[in-house]
Amino acid sequence: MLELPEVEVLRRDLEKEVVGKRVKDVSVETAGIVRPFHRNRPELVKALEGRKVDAARRRGRTIFLDLDDATSLVIDPGEGGSLHKQTASETPGPHTHLVMTFTTGGALHLSEEAEEPTIRVGVVDTETALETVGLSPDALDLFDDNPTWMEFGRFLAAADKPLKLLLIDPDLMAGIGPVYSDEILWEAGLRHDHPSSTLSTQEVRRLYRATQEVIVAAMKAAGSTLDDVEYEQIIDDEGEAAEHLRVYGRAGKPCSRCRRPIVRTRIKKGVYTYHCEQCMI
Image 1 (cartoon, rainbow, N blue to C red):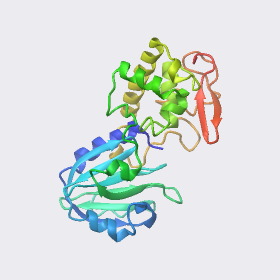
Image 2: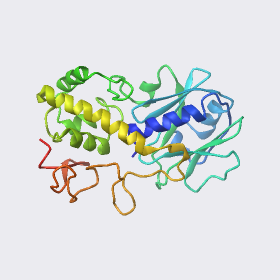
Image 3: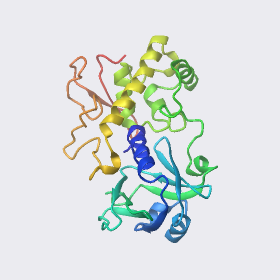
Image 4: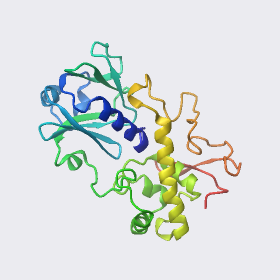
């Protein structure tokens, strides 16, 4: 699953590659990806063709391409969606669900290998885009909102939840999921079940610094998402975690800080955390 760092890299790539361009043709191979925004594929095509892309924005894990008629193309990458830059004549691959070409040349291919794709796209009114997509306007986006550590501390105290559940709650935190919540907590040396309202000033500052360092490092590791032939997944086919990850996906391997084995713990149904029982308090 793409999380905030990878999606921000994707947004920057789109800002360079498609902002200022006008959509020529749109082809939707899979009808399901346009729901719940449209009744059918032609409705999306009609809303996109001929429109110019004015801006590329992101909120959490969702991309918004603002168009020149006060509407926005919403791109939700779902569990494993990816966007790739192609030539206008490139034949779509077997897992490509949408192709968008531009009048000045070039194309974007939206793909996902899942049997039933989880990506969603649609054109919505820009002014009410967040509400239409179901994103909380009050959720904290650590990159876009860029709070001070004192503001972050007040946010943590008011939330009053176990840290892992707070970080992955989309109503409270935008764009952080299972991967980077674990990475942030390991970097800060804080347990997943540590109540956010009981953090000391020093712990708040450690957690705040960890959010900044982990997000920046992950963005550097993501490279250029549009130029990748295949998206570099967090966990590869053999179950190995990506090199830039310190704890997620590394159950049984030694903690790089204290050498104790990393543990995978079930928090609740469908929610797990990777952590070190020795050096996370």
